[in-house]
Image (cartoon, rainbow, N blue to C red; front, side, top):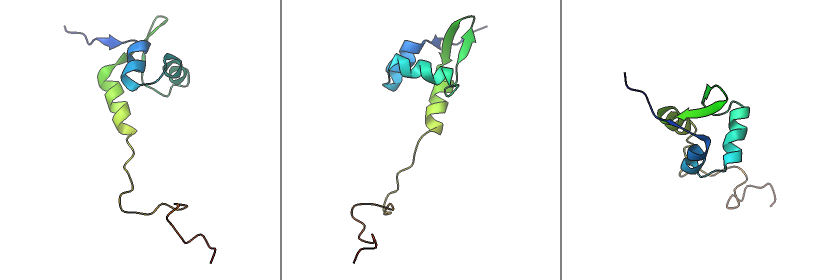
Length: 77
């Protein structure tokens, strides 16, 4: 049987470019998927990748955003 290598909090923080404190806060809030082995927190790389992908925001290309500085429809004439 082959087991998946799990990441620790520091590895996830480096991978995502955030602080260790941020990853720990996400764990406490149950915001990020993780595994608890006794008192140790570990992360599955495929689950983290899927979680990150699900948070991808698609840019509004070619559309004006309400309140945009280039939008002259501010009601003032």
